[in-house]
Image (cartoon, rainbow, N blue to C red; front, side, top):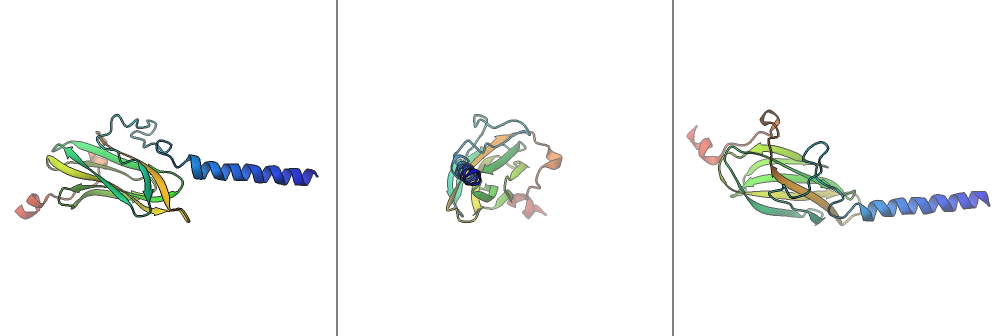
Length: 162
Protein backbone atom coordinates (compact mmCIF):
# COMPACT_ATOMS: atom_id res chain seq x y z
CA UNK A 1 0.00 0.00 0.00
CA UNK A 2 2.77 2.48 0.97
CA UNK A 3 4.68 1.60 -2.19
CA UNK A 4 1.61 2.22 -4.39
CA UNK A 5 0.94 5.59 -2.73
CA UNK A 6 4.62 6.57 -3.15
CA UNK A 7 4.60 5.63 -6.85
CA UNK A 8 1.32 7.53 -7.36
CA UNK A 9 2.68 10.67 -5.69
CA UNK A 10 5.95 10.38 -7.64
CA UNK A 11 4.07 10.11 -10.96
CA UNK A 12 1.79 13.02 -10.08
CA UNK A 13 4.74 15.27 -9.16
CA UNK A 14 6.65 14.21 -12.30
CA UNK A 15 3.69 14.98 -14.56
CA UNK A 16 3.10 18.36 -12.86
CA UNK A 17 6.80 19.26 -13.22
CA UNK A 18 6.89 18.27 -16.90
CA UNK A 19 3.64 20.15 -17.63
CA UNK A 20 4.91 23.30 -15.92
CA UNK A 21 8.09 23.26 -18.03
CA UNK A 22 6.28 22.60 -21.27
CA UNK A 23 3.49 25.11 -20.74
CA UNK A 24 4.52 27.80 -18.24
CA UNK A 25 8.01 28.44 -19.60
CA UNK A 26 6.81 29.08 -23.14
CA UNK A 27 5.06 32.40 -22.87
CA UNK A 28 6.51 35.81 -23.68
CA UNK A 29 8.09 37.49 -20.68
CA UNK A 30 9.02 34.32 -18.81
CA UNK A 31 12.41 34.13 -20.55
CA UNK A 32 13.37 37.80 -20.23
CA UNK A 33 16.40 39.16 -21.99
CA UNK A 34 19.09 40.39 -19.59
CA UNK A 35 20.77 43.60 -20.68
CA UNK A 36 23.03 43.42 -17.62
CA UNK A 37 24.08 40.34 -15.65
CA UNK A 38 21.29 40.98 -13.11
CA UNK A 39 18.90 43.38 -14.89
CA UNK A 40 15.90 42.08 -16.80
CA UNK A 41 14.88 44.14 -19.78
CA UNK A 42 11.41 45.58 -19.31
CA UNK A 43 11.23 46.29 -23.01
CA UNK A 44 10.96 50.03 -22.35
CA UNK A 45 14.63 50.54 -23.19
CA UNK A 46 14.49 48.41 -26.35
CA UNK A 47 14.76 50.06 -29.75
CA UNK A 48 13.23 46.87 -31.18
CA UNK A 49 11.68 43.72 -29.72
CA UNK A 50 10.76 40.60 -31.65
CA UNK A 51 9.03 38.58 -28.94
CA UNK A 52 6.56 35.80 -29.50
CA UNK A 53 5.98 32.22 -30.54
CA UNK A 54 8.27 31.01 -33.34
CA UNK A 55 7.99 27.92 -35.50
CA UNK A 56 11.21 26.01 -36.23
CA UNK A 57 13.23 27.96 -38.80
CA UNK A 58 11.01 31.06 -38.54
CA UNK A 59 12.73 34.46 -38.67
CA UNK A 60 11.30 37.87 -37.84
CA UNK A 61 12.79 41.22 -38.77
CA UNK A 62 12.34 44.80 -37.59
CA UNK A 63 13.73 47.87 -39.36
CA UNK A 64 15.70 50.14 -37.02
CA UNK A 65 17.42 53.50 -37.45
CA UNK A 66 20.96 53.40 -36.04
CA UNK A 67 23.42 56.24 -35.53
CA UNK A 68 27.00 56.20 -36.84
CA UNK A 69 29.55 55.40 -34.14
CA UNK A 70 26.96 54.47 -31.52
CA UNK A 71 27.31 51.12 -29.73
CA UNK A 72 24.38 48.72 -29.61
CA UNK A 73 23.61 45.45 -27.83
CA UNK A 74 21.19 42.77 -29.04
CA UNK A 75 20.21 39.51 -27.40
CA UNK A 76 17.54 36.83 -27.16
CA UNK A 77 16.38 34.08 -24.82
CA UNK A 78 14.05 31.19 -25.53
CA UNK A 79 11.81 28.98 -23.47
CA UNK A 80 12.70 25.33 -22.81
CA UNK A 81 11.42 24.37 -26.25
CA UNK A 82 13.97 26.53 -28.09
CA UNK A 83 17.40 24.98 -28.67
CA UNK A 84 19.20 27.48 -30.94
CA UNK A 85 18.46 31.15 -31.69
CA UNK A 86 20.15 33.45 -34.18
CA UNK A 87 20.38 37.18 -33.50
CA UNK A 88 21.59 39.34 -36.38
CA UNK A 89 21.88 42.95 -37.48
CA UNK A 90 21.87 43.39 -41.25
CA UNK A 91 22.47 46.30 -43.57
CA UNK A 92 19.38 47.39 -45.51
CA UNK A 93 20.67 45.40 -48.53
CA UNK A 94 20.71 42.17 -46.47
CA UNK A 95 24.48 41.93 -45.87
CA UNK A 96 25.40 40.84 -42.34
CA UNK A 97 26.81 43.45 -39.96
CA UNK A 98 26.83 41.25 -36.83
CA UNK A 99 25.40 37.80 -36.01
CA UNK A 100 25.55 35.20 -33.26
CA UNK A 101 23.85 31.83 -32.74
CA UNK A 102 23.31 29.92 -29.50
CA UNK A 103 20.82 29.15 -26.78
CA UNK A 104 21.00 32.73 -25.49
CA UNK A 105 22.95 34.76 -28.06
CA UNK A 106 24.17 38.31 -27.45
CA UNK A 107 26.03 40.68 -29.74
CA UNK A 108 27.63 44.05 -29.23
CA UNK A 109 28.48 46.21 -32.22
CA UNK A 110 29.10 49.76 -33.36
CA UNK A 111 27.09 51.11 -36.30
CA UNK A 112 29.56 52.02 -39.07
CA UNK A 113 27.15 54.50 -40.68
CA UNK A 114 23.85 56.20 -39.88
CA UNK A 115 20.91 54.53 -41.57
CA UNK A 116 18.23 51.89 -41.56
CA UNK A 117 19.30 48.40 -40.51
CA UNK A 118 17.39 45.16 -39.99
CA UNK A 119 17.28 43.48 -36.56
CA UNK A 120 16.58 39.77 -37.13
CA UNK A 121 15.76 36.96 -34.69
CA UNK A 122 15.40 33.37 -35.87
CA UNK A 123 14.42 30.11 -34.15
CA UNK A 124 17.18 28.05 -35.78
CA UNK A 125 16.32 24.80 -33.96
CA UNK A 126 13.80 23.57 -31.40
CA UNK A 127 14.27 20.79 -28.88
CA UNK A 128 13.05 17.37 -30.01
CA UNK A 129 9.40 16.99 -30.86
CA UNK A 130 8.32 20.62 -30.45
CA UNK A 131 6.74 22.53 -33.30
CA UNK A 132 7.04 26.00 -31.70
CA UNK A 133 8.80 27.88 -28.91
CA UNK A 134 8.70 31.34 -27.34
CA UNK A 135 11.53 33.84 -27.80
CA UNK A 136 12.09 37.18 -26.06
CA UNK A 137 14.54 39.57 -27.72
CA UNK A 138 15.77 43.15 -27.46
CA UNK A 139 18.01 45.63 -29.31
CA UNK A 140 19.22 48.55 -27.19
CA UNK A 141 21.65 51.47 -27.32
CA UNK A 142 24.34 50.43 -24.89
CA UNK A 143 27.98 50.99 -24.10
CA UNK A 144 28.79 47.29 -23.91
CA UNK A 145 32.52 47.53 -24.31
CA UNK A 146 34.00 48.24 -27.72
CA UNK A 147 36.98 45.98 -26.90
CA UNK A 148 34.58 43.06 -26.46
CA UNK A 149 32.31 44.13 -29.31
CA UNK A 150 31.81 41.68 -32.12
CA UNK A 151 33.92 42.54 -35.13
CA UNK A 152 31.93 44.57 -37.61
CA UNK A 153 32.36 43.97 -41.32
CA UNK A 154 33.47 46.96 -43.34
CA UNK A 155 30.78 48.87 -45.16
CA UNK A 156 30.80 48.38 -48.93
CA UNK A 157 32.06 51.96 -49.39
CA UNK A 158 35.12 51.38 -47.17
CA UNK A 159 35.87 48.05 -48.79
CA UNK A 160 35.99 49.66 -52.26
CA UNK A 161 38.50 52.34 -51.21
CA UNK A 162 41.23 49.79 -50.41
